Image 1 (cartoon, helix red, strand yellow):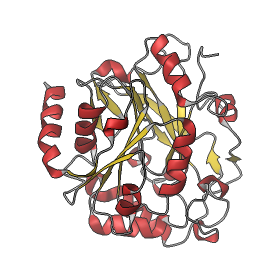
Image 2 (cartoon, one colour):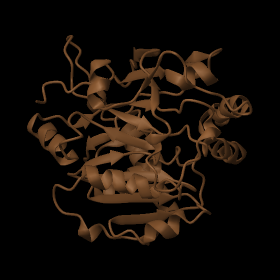
Image 3 (tube, one colour):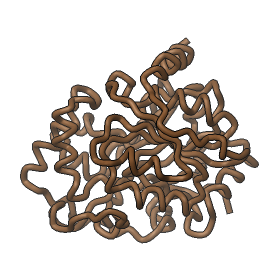
Image 4 (cartoon, one colour):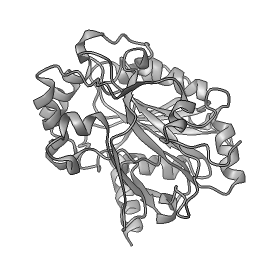
Length: 326
């Protein structure tokens, strides 16, 4: 019943979307697709598209939620992008989930769909030598329908405003550090997914209330079926079996990471904008915490910080796994 309710909700919310450009006739069987909601992210888009084109994403779906910085105009000119726009409430669309659930239901049935934000960069086993289609082919051959990736908050060494980010730049030239530990994992008894918290956001913004820290568990890559639906961001889905992306018997299933390039010099202004809009989860308590700490221009680096090298480093640290994919 719950899955049916979310699907009906997405069907209703489709009326809030206005098509700007639809190039879905280009999509071929077997293409891997991406889905993103954004607002005022023009500076990030060139690197984002370049990164995922190199990984092998064949077509990009965007919902632009009232951008005023040229994001919409930039995306219209991209030959592998289909774009919808809306001025309606991000919050009342369950933080964009309803809009993307509709587009996925309509366009991605039978395709692998990667659902990501513009500051999230998917890293998977062998991503330095194999395109994403190699991963999805292996998942198909292994009868695996979903693939998890923990969100890994990346940050610079020094205050956030010490190294300005420039359009088209690799953000990890600046935000090149991460916490190698300090993560807590629990199993969600209702949906069966793992719930992960910790990292620099937990210690810097929620040190006095770690249970309120943002969730880092995500299931961004899914072999989409019309009956699927995301429930809360990409943290969990229905049917529930798609959430079982871990081995319950002591082994390891293959998994990836989403390198999170939130902590650049652009973050302070973005946080202030989103706090004013009030369109985020739980009365924007996360952005209220950001605003309190960012006033002091913090340095997230510590003696336990690790400088990012590659996916193999993350596997050695136990943050991701290649499982039995050789």
